[in-house]
Image (cartoon, rainbow, N blue to C red; front, side, top):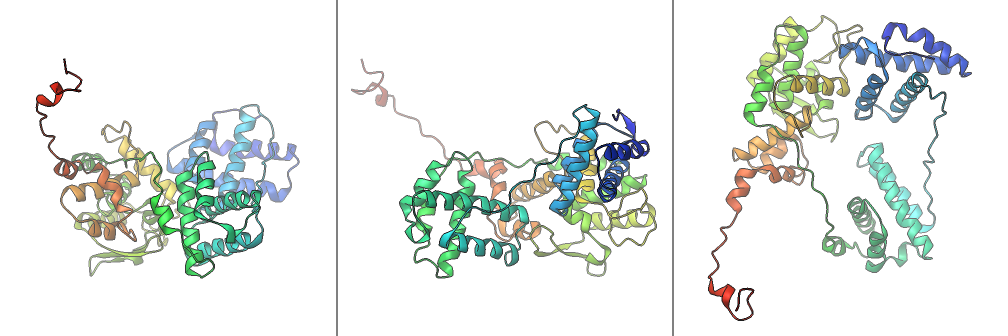
Length: 413
């Protein structure tokens, strides 16, 4: 049995013996060791010398939140952490259960649902996770139709409403998926009605999550708190500015290359990883100077084209997970009260949008800076723009006292 805490360089030999005791093949052992090495890189980047189960869970959370990593890579990371942690905690060997990824549908709706999912993946370039979520919603609807002896041609307003009402959770997600599915069918002349008016008329209560934001003063405190004399401090300061001044996501910060920077025109031009939309941002003096200072006086001298790299061998480009962890640690160490607020690039991105709104920057301009395809996504920040919300409030008129003492009033004697 593995015992914790254990130094990372001492973990490999007993882990190999553990896998052999489970009857794992040499190829499987090599795969797990490769995944374990990635864990070691994460530990080095975050200054963690000894491994314990909580370290593995922290690493796994970062891996699962990384939009760049493929599903197989994430599954391998989960497998190796489960193997190590289960043995350390005396739980023994547990084989991973695989999920059935096939859909249970048939008939016309099954055929069209398959085509629609391929369209989302190949033409719309949606992520595998999003396509899978659409598939689950359509599968639930197809099963509901089959239970009633219906197919696509039998769908009416009542059928859709009955299905939505029968759902116990995720009704809002189901509404969005079904609405887009039926619009697709209508635009491709598969059905004669899009049901647009129906979906517009459905209003479901939902819990609106307000974005985590920091004031301008708090953002400046975060930036000033970083020790810019050290190499990592120079790197983290430049990454913080990319999030707080330019609104870049962690994925775009990690993928930023020198070829994306036009020093002559003072521009940063890149294709966003999440939306696949190209944006052009001004290379603000503070951001440009921070990147230049890091490049000349802090960055290891390697041929890696990524601007921001890990400071431990083999000095490869940083992952979104590493960027997120580095920014989170800097925000927590800044002295800013983070209670009830998220810490990371996304919170700084939210803060940039909210502070621009409060300074009367219009929604279309903010949308272009953040790389939103429409202003709908940007409207989220209206909920935390207290300054302008107060300007929209109406004064409540005084009620004449005769209203309360009129006949039938609650104070009528």
